[in-house]
Length: 398
Image (cartoon, rainbow, N blue to C red):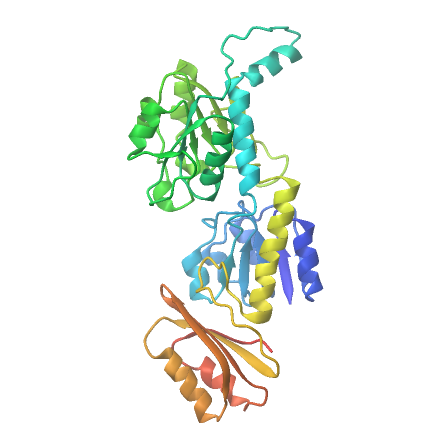
């Protein structure tokens, strides 16, 4: 079986898959949809990061694809409905780079608060300016966290440990950690915080959520950070508020349009501003995080192919059935309609096949059944199960 890993996925991922007998091809850069389509024939596993768009058109060329691994947090670059319709499982790494993103946010907050970007530029220009004007401690300042998921919550804990007061806003009902205070509205957070940092997910409804109206509500002299998604912020509006002095500084790690490969030109209206820290989407780009992501996602792909396990899948029900000796495992992905399990079991009964273990789960329009049966079974069993009108994909694993 072949695996195609794009965007410089950590070598540990390739090593893990090769250890399971996969033939692994690694590509350092992202592929555009047409290039991807041309490479998918015969590929069983696809690994990407954030720059490769897996479109429905590309998936039409995926004649052997079992699963896609997003070696990152977000999966908005993957057409999930199209993958699900084709019986392709999708996995990501929702926790592995959390600490790395949080540490970058803390570093940027301190750098902006102490005006380190300007001090650094002055020193390289031969200017010695030891003045404390405009430099502050982070202790005692109020940070407003928009999006209180894995990253936002951990940032909350570290910020409080540094002596900051924490406010947060999330559309979901999230438990406040430590002394963090939940804001009833985004407006309340913007009007009361010295630092505003975005940690929202990539759902389509978050597009353009932060623009002129939101920047105008922020306090004079406040700081703004976005380490979440590039398409959520109006960068032209941000530049205007930075140039006017209303916002004292900003740090941005993600952009609406990003280069596909190392060395490509980066274009942004935020270039050239001395009070802005620009980083090339490196929030999770530490050696520790990338190694952990490589091992984690590769492990999920391996478990799905070998055992049918779907724990932490983005689009399939989460099922784990312990392996049994002297059995064959059949996994049946199907349309979520009534009576499918009864039909599966009727087929097995007609062939006088005993069920040794079985689990069924549903998620949205899909159902997923794992069935362990006796070693000896008639050859017609898989054919009859695959022929069911509700079947999306059938695999016999052992």
